[in-house]
Amino acid sequence: MSTSALTLPDSELAVAAYEFATAVSPPFVLNHVVRSYLFARELAAAKGLRAGVDYDDELVYLSCVLHDLGLTDHADGDQRFEVDGADAAAEFLRRHEVDEQRITTVWQAIALHTSVGLAHRFGPVIAVAHLGISADVVGVDRELLDPTFTAEVNSHWPRLGLGAALAETIADQVERNPQKGPPLTFPRQLHHLVTASAAPSFFDLVAASGWDDGTPS
Image 1: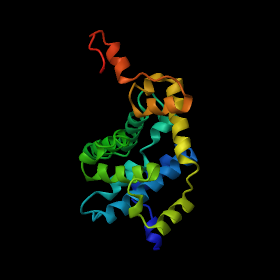
Image 2: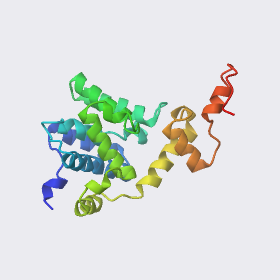
Image 3: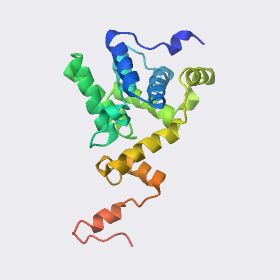
């Protein structure tokens, strides 16, 4: 396997983003965001997409490497972690005087990164970033990746129990601040799974609406 397959973008902005993510992220998050980019790039190629032609590689990298800032103490606010992270990424990019249109693309990629069925409709950058993030968490399209490549990526950036670590971190955020896990959302689901606490269902919300709409018999 060519070592270029593990090479990260080295523009001034890309390096600054990596340094920022490194400074604020726990190791499991940092390793995940880097793997997400590497998998995104390989999956895009496997699907016939060319960096610099079909999508902006730097924007995909920024979207991936900054996508879980919402799981760090730096960006642990009162919103869903995806939105807190997107806001923190936008703030970082504005400090580096990035064009607002490019910032919007990164913001959307991060805010939508858990939105299966939506993200892929927001343009190539967001779709490619979502490919890599989904591959690293739940193995979407993993069969398109060379096993030698994935083994090398996981060796350089160890997984560190990613699935459990993500779930526990998100659940802990919601436990401390329920605003971060609105009903029927991904963060609320993880809180329910990790803590075995009750989570309101759609029918609970309908019943509490005051409209007396009932539920299916």
